[in-house]
Length: 159
Image (tube, rainbow, N blue to C red; front, side):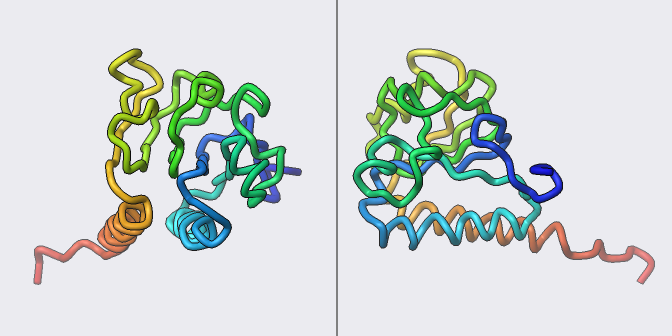
């Protein structure tokens, strides 16, 4: 039933938007996360699931406790994880499976998530350094452009 309804459990999700305290507050969350989730669904990522750090569920309260990833939450092992403002505390990172590919949006190039691959090869992290309120919208624009490019029909060489 969950599969038919398009609902996936966090622990089983293949694609996770992992929200960290770097979003700052509920307004920051609303500015970045729902538009990103909507765009991903529009371009064909149907099983997008939201996850979060403890600070997001307990301090910001923008996601329920069931969305928490980590030692006091739940382990995940997605194919793709978009880490939005996640610093990478061990209590969080150690609960992300080794098969994940992580795109990490963070302004601190020395944050633990951004330097994870200097300490271990997996999960694979692609750091995107900069203010997430600029880098995530730029990422979204690139996704839109790529989706638009792929949606265009190839030009006929017989013209």
